[in-house]
Length: 270
Image 1 (spheres, rainbow, N blue to C red):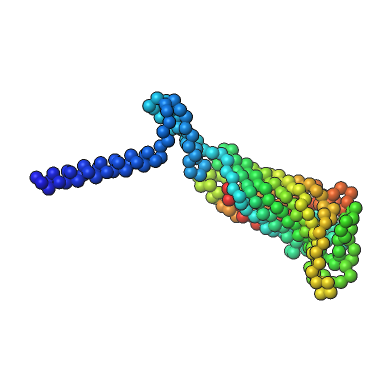
Image 2 (image 1 turned 30 degrees about the vertical axis):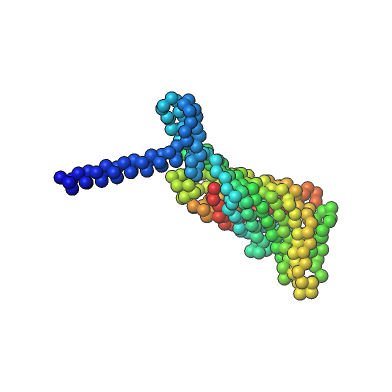
């Protein structure tokens, strides 16, 4: 009988200990308030738990936070060119660009995502910096501080000759992802508008005679720009295309050219 009594005692002791631990864990996870009170607890990730107390009864209502925010929204890296009435061939041969060397790079510093419908439809927005690097085929030198975009033939042979614009950008797109069980997993498409504000511009030329020469100016770029952006991809990787409706240069300050950029995106980190 003693072994049985001992076993029963041990079981009772362990049961009491487990109840004590469970009670302590419950106490740590429970916020005590008076009756008829409402408690809101911020849960992990995008969950919000609402606890409604009425007398001794508790009702738990779990809601999803539709908004996400992150300090890194991804990057775009690709090629850029300008269109002259829909053609890559410009009316001024000296303004022809080398598409293989002209690049576009966008860094989205902050981004947010608003869930619209079951994570299948989301409204995404970001704030970042966009660089357009135009590489000329001809050895020309854009001239700073001019009422109109002006260039002169270079007196020396140039191994590198580019004109760069830098914009503060805000893309706002509608994101569609058919399989929404796992966030940012699977095929997706998105499209929307891209807005930009000119931060500055500069030229960079390299030659044997003069070495590296940089000149900063606005070079008559349009202060504000707007266009469309689209992406199609899988998980975090996609291909993108941007087209801006307004001219590259300010009205009556340069040739009527539109910008188009395309390449690879690493996005969806929200």
